[in-house]
Length: 89
Image 1 (tube, one colour):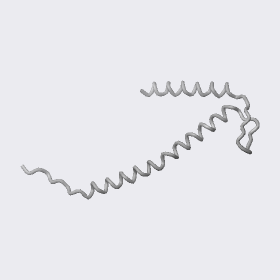
Image 2 (cartoon, helix red, strand yellow):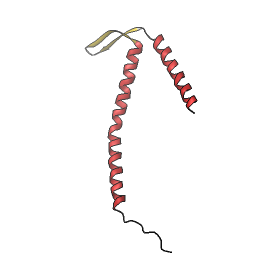
Image 3 (cartoon, helix red, strand yellow):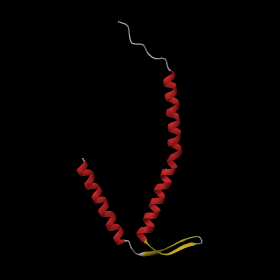
Image 4 (cartoon, helix red, strand yellow):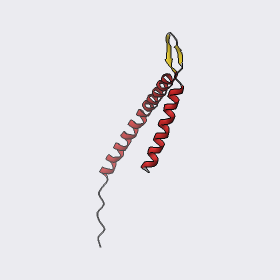
């Protein structure tokens, strides 16, 4: 299983290196009043991808916090339940 994992990782790394090498064309980026005159396309794409990952992770924080509170509340309820005694033979 670990050999397969490493092979998959190497294939993904290879494709990322090829992508980065082939997309070094400078591009102009404009957003309202902010402009970047010449940035490599691969840097721009990776920056926006990373920003998307961060925004996606931050969107999960609220749900994770709610779930942890619910788990804590349910554990307290279970602790309050009376203990079962073993059956008498």
